[in-house]
Image (cartoon, rainbow, N blue to C red; front, top):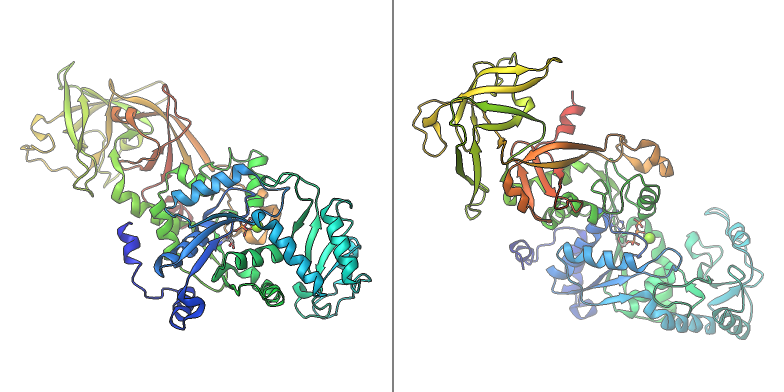
Length: 561
Ligand code: ATP
Ligand code: MG
């Protein structure tokens, strides 16, 4: 267990949900037991909003000595898939959580069917032959009571017979539904004889062709909670209007009294968060896949170089509210920067190289410099970095006519090459278009880092790579997926707001030779440039790096200009 998690064991309620759990334990409710569940529908990859729900559910159980089930809410055969199940499990594990039981609502299809039969026998459910349009028109609106279906008072025997025949596949899709008999005049529309089962002759990713009737969310979800004896069923705010129905099923069926609590869903600026919309981006090739580093999916964030700790800290930091809000994606970036600063290995990479020749450095000589891997971590050690007469530096670190306070290179200016020597610019070469092609410097032999006796102080230190040792690489720089801050207002129109510059590829990058050994899943700070990680598109011939995040928020600066 991490130190962080240990700390959270102290039972100080951090939010209203923890307060409820604390009170329930104190009053001896459910024998002091805490059992939560994370219930994804396997119809897409998890996103950062799900991470909030995961941290909450697993976090509550962790803090109060309880358990958490991972339950796949797989009651819609058309949209669900085993690929999604596998990705969800991998993502939850990667975030650092382990479930008590791996469960599937589809495992309860027999039990749910039996429960539905019980309701029919109690005269509390009926088979309706009307079309979904007819049922919808009869629903009325919150101010006008609904109209009862002509099939509402079918006999129990007839309902039992029809429901069984629905199960046996005797009717076509949509020909009949099973409805709960609640109250067509109820002020809550969800209580106006809601659907419990529909006919759908589709292959299910787990039960195959065994079933052709599938339970609806409200019935299946609540009763799955009861079957698993979940004590605290946590979901997002939009489900608060479903709670009376959740409770109604439990009361009428006299099943385990699970209780539902709602919290505000996470919305992030400059992105969309629903699986349905994310799927559109994937299907229409607007992104390269669910794990495109621009996606707010867990797999996208992982590929981009986010760490599990940074995402957990983010979920902690934004807290749990009862009112919907929009969180600035800058908060997420702050969290990852904070974590990477502690753990990332510092390396040198030149994104836009220009050659620098040290004219008084012996030709053919190579020095091996010992450079600290991470000044923030005393155990991180050192690595060898070769230095020679010709190096590459960042084009932007040289100016022909440098303004005041430009503490980098320009004619006559001195700068330290990181971990190596102080150099002084003597001259430069331009091509016919006026581009600088080579910078000529001299170096001060006594100024070597670690054993500097030169007595010279320079203000600027710049990064570099030795020309003969440099390794070419591609760097992918990501920006916001949407130019729009709040996508919640535009619905499916969000695609009109895709940021055309969300991906920039730099393909002439030179990195220090130690990065030939770069590993997937490891984080690097390209000194002065930001945090980067190796991408899975890398091959033996070509290194590809993703920028996780810049060193500071260039975007905020841009906006405030
Ligand atoms: P989506 O619209 O992205 O498909 P969903 O709510 O339908 O979201 P589920 O797979 O049903 O997705 O969700 C699993 C759990 O994650 C639910 O308890 C849901 O409330 C929670 N969840 C989903 N999105 C968010 C979010 N943005 N913030 C917090 N919790 C979320
Ligand atoms: Mg859903």
